[in-house]
Length: 386
Image (tube, rainbow, N blue to C red):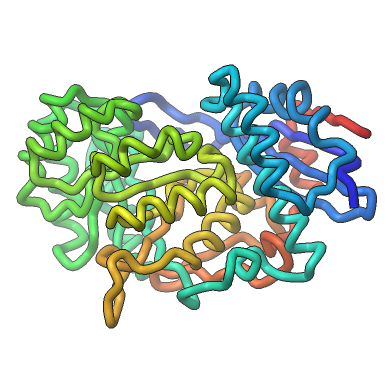
């Protein structure tokens, strides 16, 4: 079996209601979808983000992939990674491109063997995966009515936890906003905050102290993503557990955060970290240092399927007689913001049931891509053939 064709589809879709976070305002959703087709007709799907990754896939990776055996995932991963790493280009859009290829290769491996991804990874250690609702972004409505209604809807839907944004308003205003959410959902639900790198060390320490009385489960990305020393200072200076790692692009990005225990919770993202292969290795390293791994997930059904399958295989951290989500069991991000790509691309989108999602059991990623939707949402397609 050989890789015969590589196709990429840059997708974009407007959304009816824009939303914001500390770094910007979203009026549309996008994704870069990668499709590998073998000479036997087996197709594998992967995902990353950004138009530049499309160029990396076709201009840098295609000559190294076409005509190669897709079943040797390990050799192909290191071959592609070395082609970037030797010139220090393995981060950013290069890392995203590698992630999408790797996910597609695992999908092919599963379809070729008739096994779901979770079985290729050694089998699940749990029969379902706990998820938390990501939403509660800034909206054009300056009041709290819409925010509170959204938070209460997650409680009604059975989520045990949810995450909101901070960093887009003043410290005092954001603390008031988080307090309003806590008041609406009560003390029995887990509540997390995400600054998306908005703060200096001193400001992050300030808001962490102010949020202490609101029972915040973790404080995500308080400072710039690669500032290990900054994380360590924030961790030492305020009481909240720190989470980060969504923009790690490989084990080298993750190494110092894990070894120096600069975070309490690691959040790699399969479309950035190097795909399924590198995610698995980084997760094992984090577990060895006693860090819980709660995957960051922001994309289509391809990303969701890969992330659920990975999360199903993670060991409890630490081991416990009755491991519980948020304490020992991993809990995966489950995006609830508007996204036609996420909802429409797969013939059967993933749904949460009382805060859990089922593990895909079909071959490979276990999903069927609706190529009619793919073509409709595509704004730029590229193809490379052997």
